[in-house]
Image (cartoon, rainbow, N blue to C red):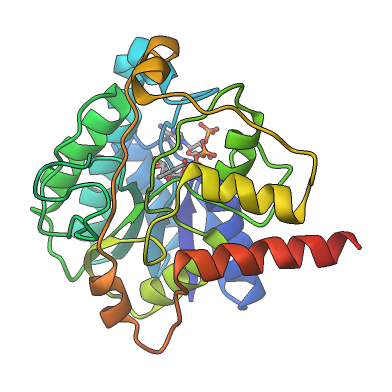
Amino acid sequence: MAVAVWGARGWIGGQVCELLEARGAEVVRAESRLEDRAAIEAELDRTRPDRVIVAAGVTGRPNVDWCEEHRRETIRANVIGTLNVVDVCTERGLHVMLFATGCIFSYDEEHALGSGKGFTEDDRANFAGSFYSRTKGMVEELLRCYPPELLLVLRVRMPISADLSCPRNFITKITRYERVVNIPNSVSVLPDLLPVAIEMSRRRIGGIFNFCNPGVVSHNECLELYREFVDPSFTWTNFTEQEQAKVLKAARSNNELDCSKLLAAVPDLRVPPIQESLRKLFQEFKTSRS
Ligand SMILES: NC(=O)c1ccc[n+]([C@@H]2O[C@H](COP(=O)([O-])OP(=O)(O)OC[C@H]3O[C@@H](n4cnc5c(N)ncnc54)[C@H](OP(=O)(O)O)[C@@H]3O)[C@@H](O)[C@H]2O)c1
């Protein structure tokens, strides 16, 4: 059973390929560019995968601010490219799992910070404060037009990996900021969730899913765990969202996503609540260093 992966050299795609291979799957690391429809078709004709995983897209370096000044490149990959690969695959009856983002929402009156009422998969994007999020929200709306049985869209948020030296890891990022906001958010702990993603793809589950651990965690809670388990001398300085806005090109999304659809879809696969998950992650990290 061959699985074609777009974005195999990326942070999330690389981890997905390793997990697939550890489970004995044959992985085809797709080489075609997302915006090149003919090349995608030729690659699928040549490699004949049974299903497809898309972890390709532009996220911006060093961060999403890059997308503000590279709008056409962002559209080419995240809009035209994503629609191309989904369109070609679903036309051929191939199941596609797409790593998308939950950074298309922002706390509002109906989903107020601290209310415990998260955005659901039926909610439409309400955050367009960055060009990255704007394109992702628009694409999600268009993806709703594809057959849900062939398309699985996973809304990932502020991913956390077990590797604390990785600059893409949300925890690592915030330990390196000069000043950090302190807002509760839904986040995705990849060691919990990537095995779930692979199983959802294998089961050919379809639809849009909030793809996070249940609950929310604040920046300070993460940094307190870092201080407790990694560096007792660690200190940090908070600043407000208004102060943060002065040092960023684009706004950042803060939200809680409701994970009940995910938990109901894979009741046999455990996705631990965020505080439990992070404590375990840090504990394992500490043990691995001692
Ligand atoms: N990291 C996050 O914070 C985060 C959060 C939520 C959602 N996501 C989503 O998850 C997906 C993967 O993210 P990531 O963090 O793993 O990103 P990443 O490390 O930047 O990897 C992205 C991958 O996509 C490939 N790619 C980019 N443009 C392409 C194109 N036009 N055609 C073909 N391949 C292309 C890149 O290959 P090249 O280097 O060859 O261009 C790279 O392998 C993205 O769609 C992202 O929006 C990420």
